[in-house]
Image (cartoon, rainbow, N blue to C red; front, side):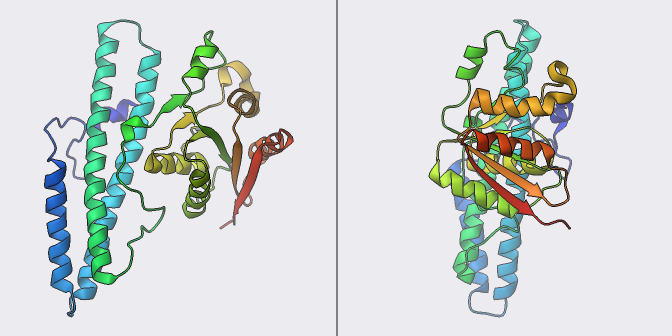
Length: 298
């Protein structure tokens, strides 16, 4: 799963993770992007080039936004790798070196994300100055500069098997636990972002619980959490222990062990929803704040 991280490259083939040179200072980044945004806005102000410059600023801002979003996903994968490496430390020099390299890569990628976000925010301000309108991404929500390295990603799969379960639970981030569940083909980013944002406003200390899937609401929620610097607790089914019943055992594990204060279900019509509805039913029976959100079938 993590082998690909060793050779992460930008779209032009240039290696990001292997690059060790220092980044420009925050002041240098701000000065350069401010100059670009201001020059473009001034060039198009009040003349026939205005719509062209406005489109250029919008596209430039969108490109930076998309780049930061891509790096955020890569950073999340690297955080998961770090968690795995911590769990398998055996005291050997090889394992220690591998963990240190992963941490260094995460810190470097974190700095890259912040730099790109700074440029995106400045270009968005230039767009607003020229058009009088706030720039909005094609999907998702605007997010501001944040520190990704501080977001906790805890792997919950091994908790039940861990003899030191009490210690493992103490490692879970403090805060309001919110579990998300849904169907495999749910793809409504805007709806999911809006509902998660609304709950996050009421519970700024939110800790998000997901199943760690690469599709559906788990994938969308992971992107949202990275954008908002919200800690994520990944609790996957334990197929080795529970076999075919693992997915349903996971539901009980999440509700009984981590005791979420809210459960949000995101369901797409015509998808198989048995597992999601099982969690909804059980959370409602426990008196947990539970809400369902639907997406129409294509």
